[in-house]
Image (cartoon, rainbow, N blue to C red):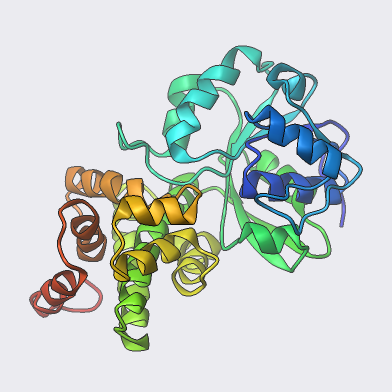
Amino acid sequence: MSAGTGSGSPVAVLGAGSWGTALAVQFARSGRPTRLWGRDRARLAAMARERRNDRYLAAGTFPQSLAVEPELAQALRGACDVLVAVPSHAFRSVLSEIAPLLAPQMRLAWATKGFELRSGLLPHQVAREVLGPERAVAVLSGPTFAREVGAGLPTAMTIASSDAAFAKTLAQDLSSSQFRAYTSTDIAGVEVGGAVKNVLAVGAGLSDGLGFGANTRVALITRGLAEMMRLGVALGAKRETFMGLAGLGDLVLTCTDDQSRNRRFGLELAAGNTPEQALKDIGQVVEGYPAAKALHDVAARAGVEMPLCEGVYRVLYEGMPAQDAVRALMKRPIKSETD
């Protein structure tokens, strides 16, 4: 596998949770000098000492070319590319923090998924607001569990950018014998897929936890994909993007495997736990919870019907019993499947 044009200079990965750590490990495995930064200095010191992230990614031993860097300015100094891997609620604040530290030629990518709760903006729109329109940007998304990437299991994902050369460079620099990255120019489509699938995965967990069965689960995935497409097209995305890794692929993954925090969140709710208790039990950010609220607002503004996602929203924020949400869906007027 040939290396990308950025492979000689460091990449700075900002966010030392499970996904940021996994991506940093993958960059380093593929030969790219990599710096990993996070806010918890004590945890970073332990990671540097143990050469792994025992809390979030015990399976991912750090390659020699991966350096743990507690100083943000030092992590960015001399880097060609910056990858932000923080939850959606922290995305704007991190961009604002690094804005004065970015050299003009630095390129920015992110693995953040979800609409901004306050504004309803997608991550690329937030990045434009904070950093301006000139900087090369890209989004990484697709059916990827951090633990499996950290363990070196075969994985594929999508990198989308309006700058085709940047997307290709990142894809080449991430790819190895066990990891394949594909490129796309549809940033909006890839981001909508990453946001909507988290809400649907909560619904899948609720459905399975209540014993609704395989028929219900596959109906939720299939009709959920239709909702994802409707919203994406309304927001300027390409329909075909949703049949790829960042759409259907990520949706199936998160709806069907218990490594998904969003699915586990739904299972906990089905077991009778409150959202607050479920979040505490999981112990990590569950993007589908705030995403359901943001998606409710975005869909309303766009005039797009998303009954499955709206049902999840009502269960989470209006106290509707999940059984009642399913009954409401089954009573909707009969219509063409392609509508």
